[in-house]
Amino acid sequence: MAIKEVVKHPAKVLTEKCKEVTVINEEIITLLDDLYDTMVEYDGVGIAAPQINVPLRVAIVELGEERDILEMINPTILETSGSEVDIEGCLSFPNLYGEVERPTYVKIEACDREGRVYELEAGGFDARAILHEIDHLDGVLFDSKLIRVVTEEELAEMYGEEE
Ligand SMILES: [Zn+2]
Image (cartoon, rainbow, N blue to C red; front, top):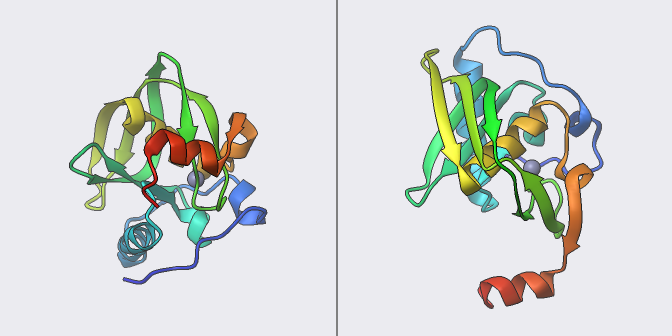
């Protein structure tokens, strides 16, 4: 396990379609662990493999109040519905925050680290985070979906003077 450097925009690896994982081996387990360590270090709510320079379809997201870790290997979107505009950021875009429209519900299928296929339904911010990370696996970055940039001053007003 290791904290990796986060690849920042603009970098080619961030805009490429990532490859499917064909076999879940030690390399993939280590990748999942590295993603976790890196996400925690940089205080993200999700991170995708290309963000640590690995162009494979692997991403993790923190879900809900419990901050459970969802590990997604080869995720596919089965269903979405609804629409909501909310603020997003991305570890690959330091200091860029803005409003993005996303579905309010998503149903995905993915593999876990044991190689088991699972389905998962999520709503609200969880759905947003999952869709943001799956976009990364297709080389789609949130700046291409920004409706409006939100300044750090605005953010501070919205969320209080936390940091
Ligand atoms: Zn991102």
